[in-house]
Amino acid sequence: MVAVSVAACTSTPVSVKTSQVMPSPSVTGSMEPTAWAPETPISLSAIQRLDVNVGYIASWTGSGPVLAQTTDGGSTWKPIAVPAARLTSLRFIDANVGWVAGFIPRDAPQVACQQAPPSPSSPCYGAVLRTQDGGATWQMSLLVPDSGVYGDPVLQVQAIDGQLAWALVLACSPTTQPRGSLACPTELRHTVDSGRTWSTEADGYIAAIRFATSSRGWMATINPDGSSDVKTTFDGGVTWTAHLRTTSGSVVGLDAADSSTAWVMTQDGGYCSATTCTNYELYRTADGGNNWSNLGNPKTAGGNCSGGHFVGPIFPTPSRGWLAENTGAGGAKATTGLLATDDGGATWRCLAQPSNTYLVSAADPTHLWITSNRLGDDATTLFASHDGGTSWRQLSLAGLGGAAPVHQ
Image 1: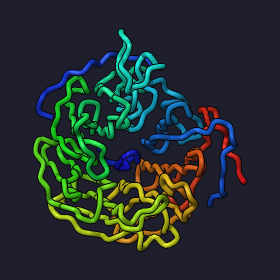
Image 2 (image 1 turned 180 degrees about the vertical axis):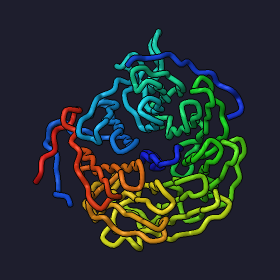
Image 3 (image 1 turned 135 degrees about the vertical axis):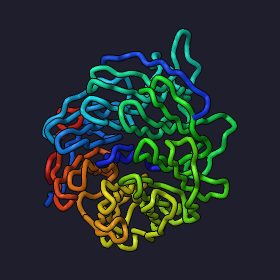
């Protein structure tokens, strides 16, 4: 899977021909090394730092609340009821309007998603949900039946405001074949009416999407020969034009700081082990996607951050950005950290702590969150920085289903 779970929130809001009408009922609903106490650790699936004070976290099924909000920079948290078992993508526009993507199990929990549902019973769904009152009520905006075979069907959700949003969803069938990092084809769906109707703007093997404005966006598609095309739209997704073809591996990251400046990162899986990858390429455009420059392999400038897998990039401005680095599924110890740049990705420096990092969300160039996972059980520690990553403060998630962190 493409690592699209990284939560990006930039200073510019981010983030098909048959119409599909979906139901939309309202549902109420410097740093010391740290470790977690053994009781019920929480594992985060998505984060979004909206501004200096407000932010949101989501957890994997059963490890904590599905969704929680802070209004004081992470000192305290309030669980928000949401009609889903887990969330994998967050896009809050402000403290009232938000879009989330996740998984809704069938109403017969003893029956797995891949089994025939008893009658009467609903199937499992991947879902895009929308709130306009801070989570007091939710509209089930987009429902995608989920067989439980290919993973959560909604890969990404991005939104400009309360009306315009895009969702990247799996379009699997028993005859579809994997391609690159994708198990099956995908569809890019778009709504302009707050999720009441959705249309399919593009399909194929779309690995990642990113919209900077209502009209300007980018997507990466995987070709049959394993190369990837990075396409640009200037009309909100109605038409797309490819200006970059990468042959250096699969696209694993796509982000934009504004309507002109965007980045694409590729990874060559042939140079990956269980715990580390060595061959990456980072590309940048400064004119909306017409021309791209190859910035090289950030690994070669990583210094002590030389192990692990990269996740990202995340750029809140055209100059400042970060790459998370972790040991992946291997779980073995490796030298990891967080890479930072102040020149748009031309050069990088290593921030050795936190280590084994996965999720990054930046409200602006100085205020960001990052998660670090403990090897063995993926217990998540959430850190905050107010100076662009120079120093970090650990945020307590005690009381949200995870144990309070303890210092070693």
